[in-house]
Image (tube, rainbow, N blue to C red; front, top):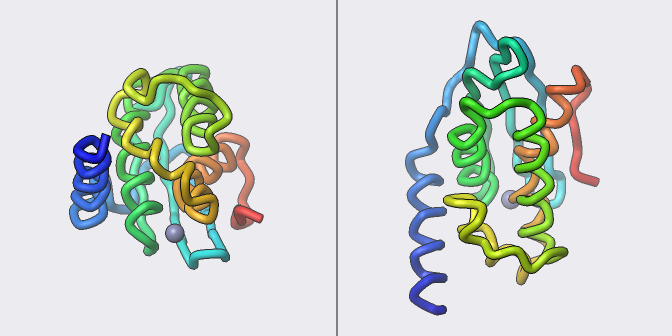
Length: 148
Ligand code: ZN
């Protein structure tokens, strides 16, 4: 288990140092801003949706390793998903990091690396910020979303 935890940490640090899809998207169909006041994480999220499918996702922002890695991996995993698939993924991810379900983290693929976050309740908001911002973008909310 400690080997697995170490691997998870490496994946998170890798995404923190080299975030994927880290850029503005001029042609985004949806976008939103998110802010986690507990940690100071900020994110601008951009998605391009065509025919109910997420064609592209990108983000910019500044924050801790967990929030950056979470946004990086979220944008990677959203591409090609339908909106309902994205919603299911959000629920599963939320359950994973809050420890509300004992689903096998492996079932979430790469996103399973965030399973360890449940041991650090303050970090849950870091991990879910990008996802809450996604929900706001899809609902067309323009004010900055704050993770209470
Ligand atoms: Zn954070």
